[in-house]
Image (cartoon, rainbow over all chains, first blue to last red; front, side):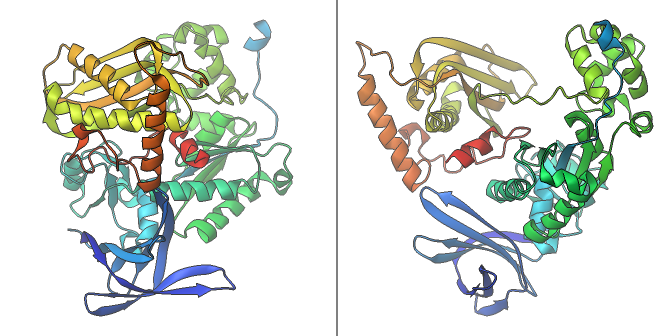
Length: 86
Length: 418
């Protein structure tokens, strides 16, 4: 099931200076920790002048779409999916 | 003309490569969400039963789901179908990553749409590696640098048409070459309506002249083809099928427009006005951003009973303000003789020009108006589209949402410019 939401979420972000890459390591949501196993896709766009980063990440139990507002550095959870049909 | 009739197949080595991203939107969604990989999914304009499917995944296509089908019909064919609404920025990001990657091979990499690219390697160092080797390298790099689930079908040929035809031979993840050595074999396996640009009506035209297969088409004389198409198109087709380039043409911007497929059946002009206003705002903003003014406004309406009505008007003076575009479009809307539920509404501005100094008006202070519009555009640009909107648009929310245009890359040029 795919659910669209818009809730603040806690994210641990890792930066690898050798690879020059940033990726979410863990998501804390609804009282649970979800270690990120895979970043499916990372894309960016602008809302006005604000640069938004979107990370589509998979964890052992759920898929999350995470949004980082680079103006205020706030993370928002936008989508949750277990990959099953509604 | 006699010389043209005896034109043989182009013997030059194939240097044109066509890349087609397989099931573009659906594949990108599967790339983003690994839980959807290997499953039948479809990207649809709306996830409601009447929503139109714009991209079925490779797995969904195996159930017979095709582009243009309704969600409810797709679910009848495949009850396990997962339906997703489009995420344009995701697709635009992939498109931009493709552009960046392909620029490493040639500066003659032309995007034909959001998911199609044409490369001409003639004279570039990459050509020395061999066209097939370059294609394999690109495929590997796409998986490594863009996404491991993303596949492309590649066609290689002496011209754009044959390269595109080659890319369509084996989907997904195909790699085919059409050249002087195998074109007869390839043509003999293709159907006339399978050629890009030949659909039922053109096939009938050709049938009327005794052309029933692609081989007949290839062997037909220029006169016969000119007679079939009743135009220069016959000659162009003769060149295409013989491997000579005719499609290496880039068309400039002629108009700016926005359209909207209405989810609910609205009839009256008053009810349609807020949607029309938003379409005009979007069109006007994009046009001004590119530095254009327009001297023509066009309105097109598709009704739910399949009736179609459209009208364009050429103006005496240039317009740039979305409010002026709306006024004219609303006047056109009221000229429609139909009073039935609307399915699709489209506004466009044409007769575009980049004018530095506008004709001053006795009745209106154009400079003042231009300054006001520029100021509103700047605010909207900084804080996001539609923070300042006409009162008529209040409460519209996400109506007329962001979409990726089909079959063109003009909107992507706007993103690159900005």
